[in-house]
Figure 1 (cartoon, one colour):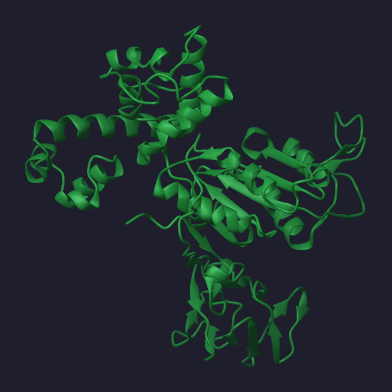
Figure 2 (tube, rainbow, N blue to C red):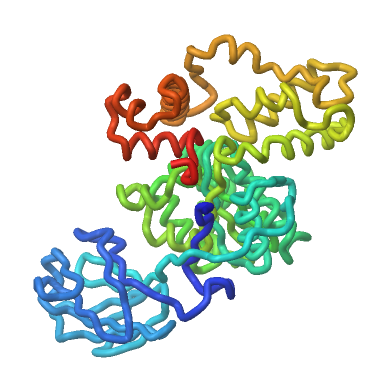
Length: 450
């Protein structure tokens, strides 16, 4: 059974089905990260240990408020607290209704009424292509189905996946399939710019706003007006920029650096990250409220090593784009394909594209896939040497080396033990359950083979 590739935080798609289910999440304060599910029956919030959501904030009353949710209607009731309940900067009366997504303040604690993520159950797309993405695997056709649905609305999408899996291609494909296709597509690599330059790139600046600002510059939000803004590598964005991003996403107004007035914008936002932003929320480096704003639909692009059946169709597509006929000769098959399938693909589809470009450049006169000099022989001859990629960050390069080590170690040991799980676990001094997880992670076994 394939892994679910998407979750939604709203009833945006009919496939999500049913009423919105909500939870009350602590997004700032001493108890950040704690949450309680909301329903038609009231839940209590306070410092008393008998409350449904117990807070440690000394400015919160023992029984501070009660909250209930019926669909998209959320009622909030003050239980006679000392400091009251703030909503959008105003003190709530004893009882009021707020919308899903509302933020409430109790003492030093901020709580958000947040939809609960639910799996988006869709049938795999019948198409083997979405924009410039091509695939044969069931996993990617499930992704295509979600992206096809997302393109029909202005829903904000968060695309996650390792480096080189095609996150920007997915974003461009959504844009090209949407009603905004005639508008601009603006891409910003948020991880490549320091904070001051990133603020200027995103929001723009006026002349003289800071040293070096010799002329006025329209930011990416303004340049993407009427179209789509793609924000890549958001995991490392500073708290200051996160706060400004959240404000723009909520109000759809942008204020340039050094400006006094805000300017309205009409655009669709697609975000991407190679890191799991939910884990960044858990460790406190990424704002929970911004994460929820970005991940209305959250899609994970699987790495190439987990969908090796796509290598042949990707190679064929790359050959077509470069003027070669993949249908001539032996098609995309034979020793060249075997060599590619056996590779670990730490750089995913981007690495495959580079290998194919190099092979075409080094094979003048090639007319078929079999004629190409694929160029993995050097890597094969150095099979026992781990490749250190200095084009990546330290953390990402380290992760790639560890992945190579794991796969090579387990591949050799698994073969030497003749695919015997108990013997492999004994020689590796690993727990059988953990070993099984690692073997499955590296595609050495499938659930059916266990």
